[in-house]
Length: 432
Image 1: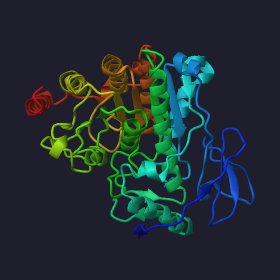
Image 2: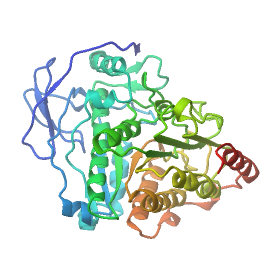
Image 3: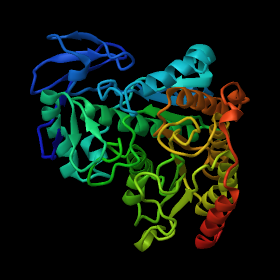
Image 4: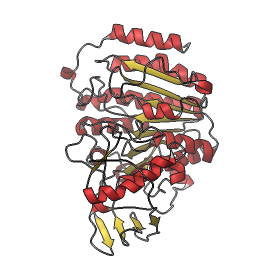
């Protein structure tokens, strides 16, 4: 079933005293509930409520202390959107829990690392005004209204968005995801005021966002989490110049479109040439005042670790150094992994380790270490979770354990002649 989006009523939040839960009152159903974001259980309610019937949520404001921020090397948030789920769909509710499980197994959580790793457990959801800084209000209100249809039908496909589904919790789950990213920006910026080496943020969130265009959802994505965080950084913190690195295997067309005429936000995407959604041509360099602040590097199928390392050193580093951003945001898609089912690149867990390590180093060089990663794609749960875990190791300055997961037998020769041609062309277009 598909539905067109129209304007609907708002849900009204209330503060709850239960630690680590979110409590709400919904005008439509007239009940409150406490919902555990980790496992989807309902802790208490005015009547029986299933997790997939959540209509709104809220979290109290509990910012980390200055000392916590100064001590941390990584600060992360978790928003698994357990109610936003379609069985057998690649973008399913198992993705974030698989990552959290891997972090626990690899002892990469506060439980094992103490002050080195900080989980931002309480954060505000994004407001409609926050979302409207990137998306048209007609779409935002229309999606909220569509939740009534999703509640009745159980699952809907949003008209005009391709393979993007919605359940009754999708709207609120998407507000929470965007809020988690914004809160990480707040924390990283706060830390950078007190230390030259602030923690790196990592938003373990879904639904993903980089395909969502200003007018609507697309390609599994609902709200543009990275784009919303970029606008938030500008408006709330006065960080005028933001650099967005997108290494998802698919072009981040939504982020691209949101900032195509903005000279203060540089969007750089590496992605597989010819993959969904068919955008991201090298000739797309932005327009108007934003001409030159969009760089798209389509990589030929089969590109892997060597191609990405070369692109990083010859394209990403000089672009960032020339732009001189105040903040780096990363659309961290793990679907370019050789084991991922939705594309045909051959990144490895080691590739993602190197990317995280090098981006952290670059952020420290150009913008006082202010950097936040946002989970985008990644649909093989094993390669996704192992690669995020190794990214955490990189951000901690520890050795990679990628060799324990990566199997060289899966790899084949990269098409380096085509890679070289693509990189040289991009360097010529952008005068690098």
